[in-house]
Length: 83
Image (cartoon, rainbow, N blue to C red; front, side, top):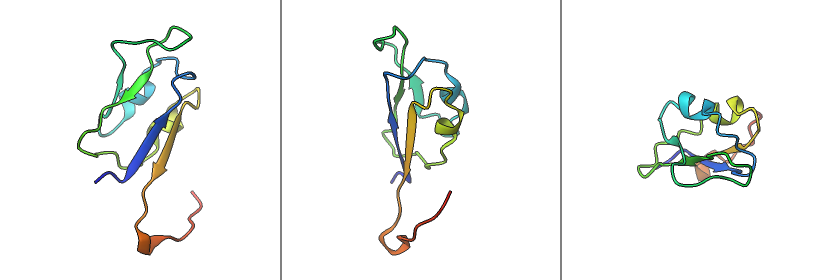
């Protein structure tokens, strides 16, 4: 089960590939069959096995702030944590 979930704002993505190069689980890839409204190939998530750890490296390194990462928490661990 994935420990994290990624959302990508494709309209902001400029296809720089920084996130794809730095994802430790290699689940981010550049779209091969489509472009966004600005003419860039956006990043897409390919994570059929739920390998995302929620590490946020992709969101931190993205110069356009096009990536949001959500960390999954267990019901018993629902304590607010400042990151």
